[in-house]
Length: 373
Ligand SMILES: *Cc1c(COP(=O)(O)O)cnc(C)c1O
Image (cartoon, rainbow, N blue to C red; front, side):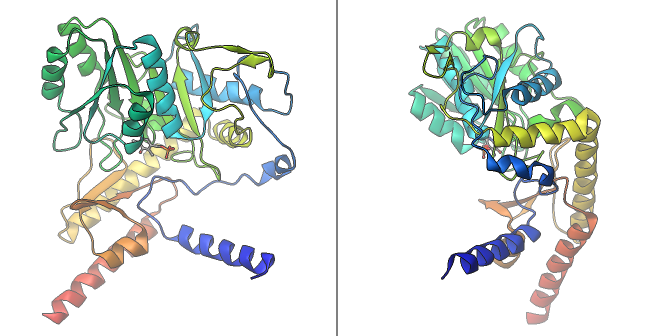
């Protein structure tokens, strides 16, 4: 196949696959065409975004603006915050756990069984001993099991991986309850990392707030940039405290900066996308996106219940959970399925029309089954 046909075929396939999907937390409603010119330059954000670097083909100024935006949204101390744009939520989680381990080399990590697979891998990479905590039925951490397990290991520092939006059911752990347990057991050496890959982005807008941010007690928070905001290139954000990152910084004269990030060379283009998105949306736009998603999720749940499907969602979640669908439906709508449940995520680009078309498919399938009997 020649280069052009292969490119055209690939583009065609991507367009088709992108049209129909409801199962993954990926926003598709972005337009970054004003940024095309930037693809002509080798933008590289190597080094710490808060330190002047010798490499000038970078977007550090914008990176700092994005970090400031999220630090503010996550109620970080304005005098003591830091962060950088990563390659995705997984790297952001790795960073949080890395700082935690540097702070408490003898700590244990506690995470619920509903935790994202990146966390288990990161713990393995960092060689930190970890304990899996039971989840409640809705996938939120089981606080009683957490307390009992912590009590048993209370002579050791504790790193708690708190989920704000689990992958399958978008369950959110309550950091104030976790803090309460640590206080009760008098475990002073502790670190809380909040994995907010999808939901962290709109956590501040929930009608019934669930404690998750820096003011609530998180030491670091990670989100994915390509999930709720949307980006043609995967990206993530990690927010932590400057005082914590100071413990892992080492100067590197070759780049004239501090080596405080996981990777050396860093994507300067994805910073542009995130910056452009938050500049256009602002806090109000982000909030409107969340409210739209929430409305669609409620609509979807009601429609599913109306045709006899037992769909449900966690409080404030834009993820609708239902019993496992057929493979035909799953493949057509690219629905993530695990065990006996399937979920559908009402990202900002999902419309009522799309939900209607999905419901139509379910009704048709049901009718066909009845006809067969
Ligand atoms: C998606 C997700 C991640 C990983 O994020 P990537 O950006 O894909 O690396 C981590 N945690 C949770 C809960 C997620 O849903």
